[in-house]
Amino acid sequence: MHVAVLGAGYAGLGVTRRLEDALPPSVDITLVNDGPEHVLTHEVHRAIRRPAVADAITVPLAEVLDRATLVTDPVADLDAEAGVVETTAGQTLSYDYGALCFGSETAYYGIEGLRDHAHPLKTLDDAAAIREDALATIERGGDLVVGGAGLSGVQVAGELAALAREENAAVPEDVSITLVEQLETVAPNFPANFRRAVHDALVERGVDVRTETTVERVDDDAVYTDGGASTDGGDHRDGDDHADGESHADDGRLTYDTLVWTGGIAGRAPTEGERPVVRADLRLTDRTLALGDAARVVDTDGEAVPASASAAIREAKTAATNLERLVESDDDGFRPRLDRYRFDVPGWLVSVGDGAVAQLGPTVLTGAAAKAAKTTVGAGYLTTVGAIRQARDLAEAELAE
Ligand SMILES: Cc1cc2nc3c(=O)[nH]c(=O)nc-3n(C[C@H](O)[C@H](O)[C@H](O)COP(=O)(O)OP(=O)(O)OC[C@H]3O[C@@H](n4cnc5c(N)ncnc54)[C@H](O)[C@@H]3O)c2cc1C
Image (cartoon, rainbow, N blue to C red; front, side, top):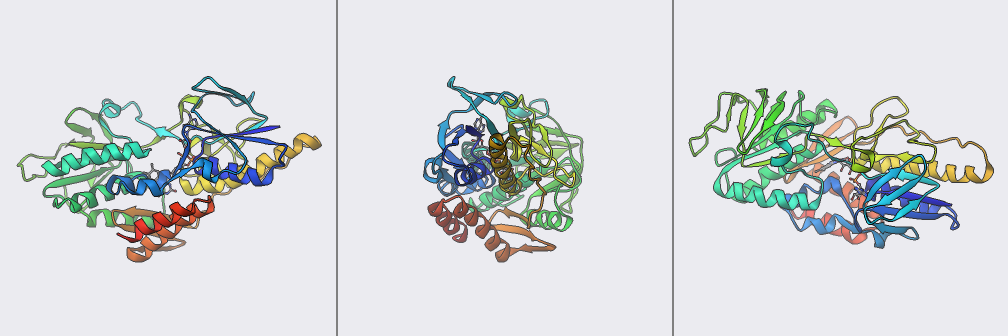
């Protein structure tokens, strides 16, 4: 019997570590990842301002796996019905039961010029490229634009504002940071008090938040939007003058020197860019589950689960239980009763530069309490995956700010 887990992010590593404990030694487990490391994707924006954080959020998989065989080669092709995987190096793996956990790509929605001109932010390499470009913009004075105000976009805008300040640039006089969002609010899928606190934290740091603003086209110099609303108290639609006397925004045209796009996610190549829908038992086919960003999970209440590390970590528990039951059912011949995932997280936490916003139950915290909560959760997660050194380093890096 062979169980394969495809992707070693929050979802895949969580499933694999549970199966290592739960399945009998006679069952082989393979973890296929496109590299030898587990990276805390939800912290990669920190590396824009603090490159040294990269080390604390990178966990060599070999150090935290017990008996699973690790294949460090991307999945190129997948037959989820038959249970057959092909890697880019041409290796073919067959599995009896499997879990598809390879996360997501940046979605560009076919917006003209966007893919060619914007930085995505998914990996530490992306963060390094954004840092280099943003530092050059900050040094000469210019415009930084972030498209998409979900969890990643709000945190990127916060980091860029803090980076500009650390480089002694005044925001928005020397350097403008504009966060563009198509929907009515920042962090649109999250509770109202959290959205408000995140919005206020960004505006306090000089970020120009433009909601109800749709990016329509991008060229070498500008992002063309449908106009939209500035929610930071000012109305910049007629143009705001910078030190160089040039207008940054005019009739929905936003000039940029550095552009980061965090406006959405799409499936990866092995699922042809799709994120397949799975119901609460996470079953994609008879033998394959799908979870984390790689799938659109509809939970046991019929609610769409937000793509998030918080959800991926919790879905991994349901997936591991269900894979264990499927393996057992192969022996006893009964159709297994599968667990169903209900989306339930204690709250949400984001960093906004060197500050943070935490929503814990009905309460929203900012300042030192929110930072402490964020540090505890990040380091706590690393501890649960056995990355003790990284947990200590992350806590030290966060508390040093
Ligand atoms: C900047 C940023 C900030 C964020 N902030 C938050 C936050 O504050 N809170 C929150 O809950 N969520 C946050 N998120 C979202 C969160 O990071 C994702 O929802 C989460 O990473 C999804 O987990 P996953 O395991 O499905 O995928 P991932 O964590 O992306 O892991 C996928 C794994 O699969 C591997 N892989 C990719 N392609 C292949 C392939 N072809 N073959 C094999 N392996 C492959 C990848 O290398 C990776 O190891 C943030 C995301 C970003 C980018």
